[in-house]
Length: 201
Ligand SMILES: [Zn+2]
Image (cartoon, rainbow, N blue to C red; front, side, top):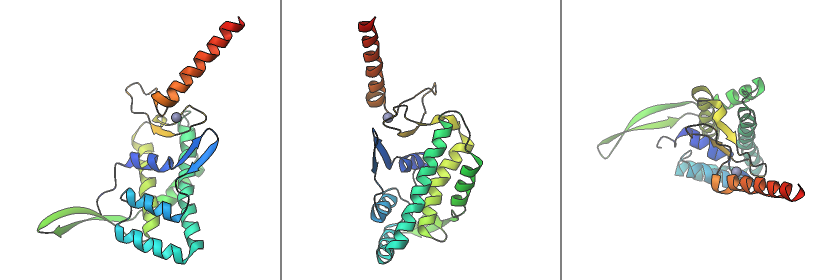
């Protein structure tokens, strides 16, 4: 299995599997199958792992629901942490405890494998595949909080959107997930409010 994609992209993409359109929630991880497909698409389980987990969780739907819930919990935790970092607050002690609990499952090692006479430096995991994948996503969040400016993890300032992003702009003052959509909406709303004020004046 190759190394998973850039870590902060991964945890941000994962958090954004839950989206809001005004107050209507859209959950990309609507069931266990959608979750495992997402993990496969992001290099967090192998093809063999995907097939095995799908078969296992189809046989045991209650276990499937529990596993899905664990991922949703990490997602809710990421949004909660971003809710704090967005306003310049560090994560709470309870949030850190939760995050560390998830990270404990992230046991892995590197290995050199030979394939058609060529050596590949690869990443191998130990133990439960899904808990591992969840720990890998959580590791991106943990490393981000430790190594970067946590205040740059933000929820879009458009109340109806709440999309998470890492502000990598030079000034670090980006407020919207996308200037063309949410940023523009805010500009239009300000413009309308001003126009109304002018009419009422
Ligand atoms: Zn937005």
